[in-house]
Image (cartoon, rainbow, N blue to C red; front, side, top):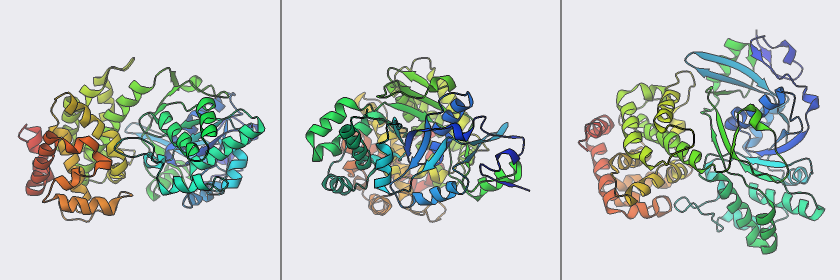
Length: 492
């Protein structure tokens, strides 16, 4: 017997399911959040739920928003359960469930007029974002905002009816400026280097295409704090819905499953106040960069390291990849020999211990994270998580054999078939281009590295090109297992 999740049924939930200790009616909107997906609901929403449970911060509730038609599916699911979400934490020795109630509304995705109206409300003091690495209109190789993107050009020409998240944010800021209201803070919670600066570049860059003086006002008056966010959160499938129903007796059409670990490090830079999140474990610092670089290179770079060999060997779950001795050893060797040496000291952190923590988290057998999710969107992730590390190693004159192999594994994966001959379904917004290029690179390695928007100057490096070509040839001639074996034996 299960209980269908809603405000009315909260008292009927099984005792082992934690529920809010605050009254939903006591909450008032303070944040509009774009990108109401699993990570947001396992991370930012959890921190707010913990804060609200202390009896404070009730004027910082979330209003959901979005710009894409596909986001209406999630909105409909959450509407059917009064915006509540079940969050299940799992690892080998722990599983717990809780219900969060920090979202009090979810505006219709794509309804720009309604969203702008809410952004103009003085009660809204933060606009937060989890719009994925590819949502910021930046050139992958340079990391610089791309003002020529068709969607950006369209918004610059039609400011009254924007289609992008940044066009909508600017319209809200313009209203607040006209009405004499303090501007809100724009807070990226996405997993990209210098996410605050990148967000500022996008918002101000779009504004500059239409109105220089307004762009200057945004630059001078709006805060864009950098942050580092971390919690492994896989996609929801029928597997997760079934576990929630069978183990906890809750029927939730869109639950979130995640690991127990979570981390949020953020600059304390806001235009009109913020929730007291330090009370629930958020670390506010002067400079996020050291934490950010550590996480992006060691954790996200580590994800990329295990993703493609596991994908080519038909391994389904991430913990299964870590159970494979070749994949696990590849991760350990590459992290310690080539990635970790590029990470400067981080206050209060021992990098070797952090690396061991990452290995334990990847090995979590309960989380159900898939290799395919890690392989997703390499054209946006590789330029952020791997290629800058290669650039630093080349600049230092240091070895790059493991990083070159990682890049060759990505190329081989994008060819579109595993070592067993199984078809790899499209797994990147640029899949057609990547597949065509990977097919050409089988006999002409330079074709892959010629993707200058992805590789930049790294693709022009003779030492890297030689190491990449040797690895790709070996992958085709001997397969993934033997190539990893040779790398681990220093025979690559």
